[in-house]
Length: 283
Ligand code: ZN
Image 1 (cartoon, rainbow, N blue to C red):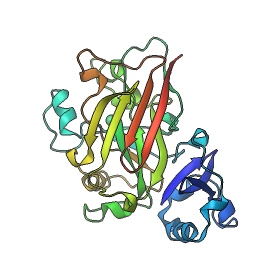
Image 2 (cartoon, rainbow, N blue to C red; image 1 turned 45 degrees about the vertical axis):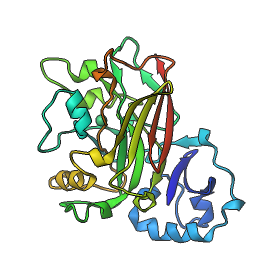
Image 3 (cartoon, rainbow, N blue to C red; image 1 turned 90 degrees about the horizontal axis):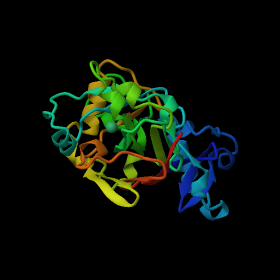
């Protein structure tokens, strides 16, 4: 199934049509876009998807799309999780993952503006696949990890490199969770919709130029490994997000370096999910 937040309402997307979940279910399921992050509702949502006539519903208007999970209870990102990014960052390949927080305030939609705070000149992009938890998850094993997930979406992990590496103490969380630094979307897609959930193409483009082009089969720590490692000590709930890391090609590691400036367009495409297109503004 493919879900979207259409003008703040939970929506099933079928053949390009926007099926309003509350209306189609005669009110049995609510309109809050957080509902489809709850795996308990997925069997009912699947019945709904099978029973509606998409032709009776309006064509989806991309301009109406918000973040598919607008209020994640918590969120994390992985610091180095693609071999290509570890190599360009001149770091050893980690033997265990390193995480930082991404809080609700940073989440915005697939076509929303990314705001570069006035005067900050090292704002970088990171194209990523984002996983969405769908039920309470504690002490998962790698074998059952995917069963805890409502699905996946496309994301950006925007970073202020100046703040992230400001000496003497690095601070990833603050530098990566400014307002608008977590665009997500356009859809939440259940993993059964992906041709290969462990090998998904991830691409970033700045003003149409491909700057990142990777695949989650290059992850140092796979989705199941991340879920198992994190849930040893942290209990996850429906709607919690994890940005799974970024492939090589980030702006900081390029020669010359490439940082986000007012007027640029950042596109992020994840295979089987879709493409986000976020304009960059400075203010
Ligand atoms: Zn990242």
